[in-house]
Image (cartoon, rainbow, N blue to C red):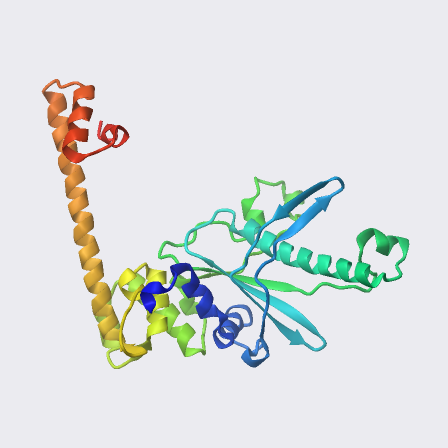
Length: 316
């Protein structure tokens, strides 16, 4: 089963669970207070694509969010979204702002289409915007989860992406804050959902590399196959990501041993590759000392190692 699961779907499916989704937002945004209740969350369409029209110019924007849910607060509701990020993105606050903005645009366009279909009576100002004076949009709150081992060194808000601004401009600049969660420092949050806690905790500890500590700490603990696959995605372990077994759970120590073996094999392979490159570089250096021309050296490398000319020239 596991080897057929698309890697980019693993994290989305994990967070589609209302219990996990609610626990993440409660821990990160509401200091552990149970503001979001799993039983009241509703799935929403993740497609926020739309058309932006300015006078005689129109442009379509395609945007698909990872996971989006809503929950009622009184008679109205609030929209919550999760974006998963494997790599540092130096425009992430802008990207998040666009996702949220496209969500607002989508609702605005639904309102205007509804009024048009109903042929609602409107004042001149209302007709111009397509919205009635009393129409309101629903707030959107987003979290970006950054899964990499490498610490985030990108911007955390729109202001961080701007050129140096004079203080009087900086004070009145309309900023847009990104709510970033890093796996590496996720120990600052208190998660109550066991799945969420285990995924963040084990991923952090795998990144830290103290395998003996993990074995000792979790020696009597079993873990769901689904969670192993998610952790495998986060720590980039194909062994865990494509786990195949008869049961639905596995002992954590067994999983650690599998990852340890994979890590060792990858290290040996990388070592062999580095050794190969070093050997080729030494050979090129020796040929240069013998006065052999670059053209002949490139030809020899292509012949011996089946390089393209471009690959061979990288050693020159």
